[in-house]
Length: 147
Image 1 (cartoon, helix red, strand yellow):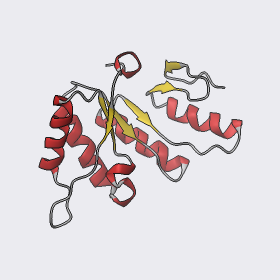
Image 2 (cartoon, rainbow, N blue to C red; image 1 turned 120 degrees about the vertical axis):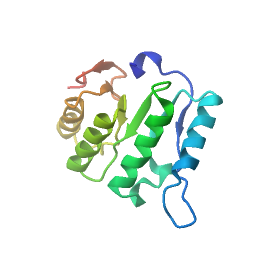
Image 3 (cartoon, rainbow, N blue to C red; image 1 turned 180 degrees about the horizontal axis):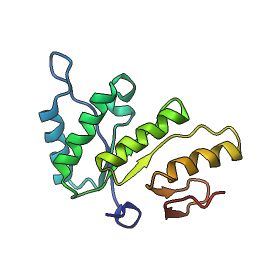
Image 4 (tube, rainbow, N blue to C red; image 1 turned 60 degrees about the horizontal axis):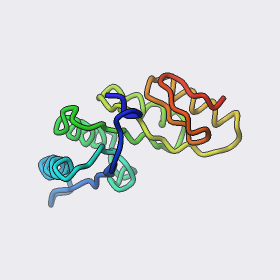
């Protein structure tokens, strides 16, 4: 599925449900995903800030993404949230999300200057997700036209 061609509608950012003993409520998350699909969600962004992403371990982040991917079974696109504090962590997160099966990644890249921004976008694009450049509005796979 090419999300740049098929993505129209509401992209839901999922909260992370927890059990009473502070573990991820996988069944609750799965039910939430199915409910959102039934009501017309066009895609999911996971994990993201609403998912308490900075409080989750890497294993918990993977568990959430795997759960969403398992429930959706390709019915709607999953965009992996790869925002991180450093470029290295951002690339590592994006790589894991794409390996798990996310169709695209969303990453917040702090702007320092044009050269640094381009370098970081190109590094993400080299991983193979579809690039949607906020600077030019153009889209293309495997690279970014904003150089």
